Image 1 (spheres, rainbow, N blue to C red):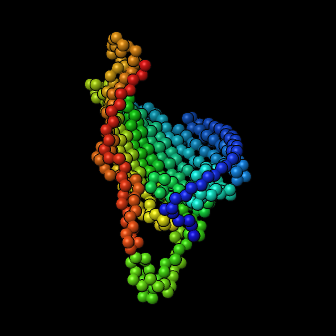
Image 2 (cartoon, one colour):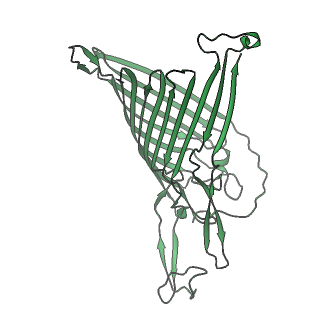
Image 3 (cartoon, rainbow, N blue to C red):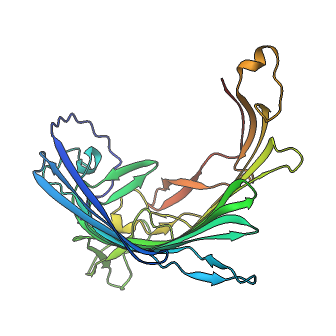
Length: 371
C-alpha cells in the first residue's frame, strides 16, 4: 500500500551534503536542398552526476527541422513564400530529484532516490503568413511523453507533498496550438489552446472492499452491519496526475485608441477545465474528483503621460524619459475560482468538501517612470 496523507504534526532535523556535476554538448547541421528548401538537425546530450545517490544519467536529444520552401502564385502572377516549417524532436530526459522530492512523509530522506525519466516524442509545425497585410504566426505541437521512475505527489491545501519514492510510471500526451500576430497594426496579441491528458500508475496501490453477510459494502458510519464476511481486491491502475487539466484556452488582446495612440487597453481571458483532488488522509488513488472550471477575465487601461513623440517637457519633467499610468482590474467578472477544498468530518465519519476560492475582483493602480 502507498503512504496515506497524515493530519499529525512532524518535527525533524535533517542534514545533507552532496555535489552535483553536469556537462552539456550540442551541435547543429544544415543541408540546403533547393531554393529556400533546407533541413536542420540539432543534436546534443547532457550528463549529470549526483554524489548523494551515486547516480549518473545521460540525456540525449535531437530535433530535425524541415523548411519546404513552398510557394504560391498570386493573382498578379507573383510567387510568394508560404513559409512553413516542420519539425520532429525526441529525447531521453532525466530530472534529478531536489530536496523535497527525496523526503518521505515521515520526514526521513531516501538515499536511494533516482532521477525521474521521460522519453519525449514531439511533432510540430509553424507558419508565418499575413492577414490584412500584417504579420501572423501559427504554431502547433503534438507530443507524447513516457514517464518512468516517477515520484508521486499530492496537493495538500496549497502545499505539495512528495512521496519520496520512485513508485510510479505514467504518460503525458496532448496538443498545443497558438496564433499570435498584429490584430491591431503594430500591437502584438495572441490566442492559445491546449488539450492534454497525463496519468500515472502507482506500484502496489491495491485496496480491498469489505462486504457483510447481506452483500452490502461496509462504509464506516453508514453501514449498520460492520462485520466483514468477504472482501474484493481492487487495483486502481492508471489515475490522473495532479496536473491533468484536459483543456486550457488563453487569449490576450491589446488595442490603442486611433486618435490617442498614448492610450492603450489590454484584455486577457483564461479558461481551464478542473484539476484532480481527493479527501485528506486517503490513498493517492482516491484523488480522482475534479475541481470546477477555471474562468478569469482581466482588463487594463494605460495612458502615457510623458515620453510620447513630439511631446514637450519643461521644468523638472525634462528629467523623465517615459511615464505611464495604468489601471488594472483583475478577475473582472468576480468569478469564484477554486484553489483547494477544506474537508469537514461529521460524527459518523462522513466527509464533506468545502471549496476555498482564489481572490475576488481586485483593482490595481500603477504609476511607472523611467529616468
